[in-house]
Length: 337
Image (cartoon, rainbow, N blue to C red; front, side, top):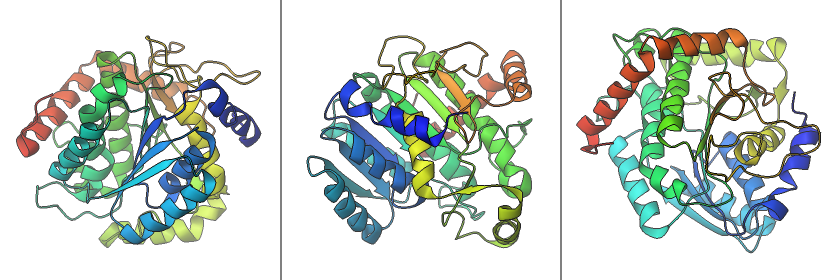
C-alpha cells in the first residue's frame, strides 16, 4: 500500500529529479480528479506547461488563476472541446502537436454516465472513457515518445474491476447492459494499454482506480444510470471510505510521475523512488513491463484479474479489441493507426 505520506514524499522529488518545463495534457481537467491532479502537477513541476482540455470556460478560468498562484513560472492553456466526439479529439490533438515537440504526461479522466449517442453514433458512456482516450493516446504518442525524463499515459477509471468482455458488441454493450458497463470498459482500457505498451515500449501506461472520491462525476446521468448514481450517493459512504479530491490527487500525481511505473525500455522512468518503494509489477506479471493496473492505493490489482487479462491476450481478445478500436477511429475520423 502506498500511503499518502509516501506519495507526498515522492511528489516532492519531482522538481529535483525531473526536467524543468515538462508538458502535461489533462483531458477532463476542468473538474474533479483531473482538476486537482493538474494543480498538484503545477505545484511540483518547475516551469510546467499544462494543457487543460474540457468544456467549461468558467471552470478553466478559475483553475488557471489558481495554478498561476501556485506556480507563476508555469504556462496554462485551455482548449475548449466536447471530446465525446472523436473528430473533436482529432482537432485538439492537432492543435497541441502543432505547438509541442514533446509531451511528458497525458492524464485522462473524461467520462460520464450519459447513455445517449453523439452525432458520430457512439454513446457518451462509451466514447468518453474508452474511444476518446485511445484516440488521444494514439494521436499524441509520437510526441510523448520525444520527451525526456518522463513519458507516461494515465487513465483513471476502474482498474481491478475487469471482467469478460462482450466481443459481439464492443460499443453497444455499455448501453444495453449499463450496470455491467464498468467491468466491460475497464477490460477494454487495460487491454488497449497492453497493446500500446508493446507498440511503444519507451512509454509507460497506467490504468488506475481512484476509489471513492467526492466529486460531481456522473451529474449528467440519465435513466437507469441516474438511479444508480443516486443509490451510490446514499449507500456509497457505508460501503467504502471516501477521499477528498485533494487527497486523491496526491496519489494520482504519484501514479503519473513515480519511477515505480517505468516504461519497459528507453529510460524516462520518472521521479526517483522513495525509500522502501519498488518498481511495480505490470499486467503481464513481470516487474517494470510498461503497462500497469493499480488500485486505489497504487498497488497492483488482484492476481485473479491479472490471470484473466493474461488469458484474454492468449486467446486473442486483445488483438480483436485493437482491430475494433482502430477500425472505429478510421471509420469516424479517417485516421489510420
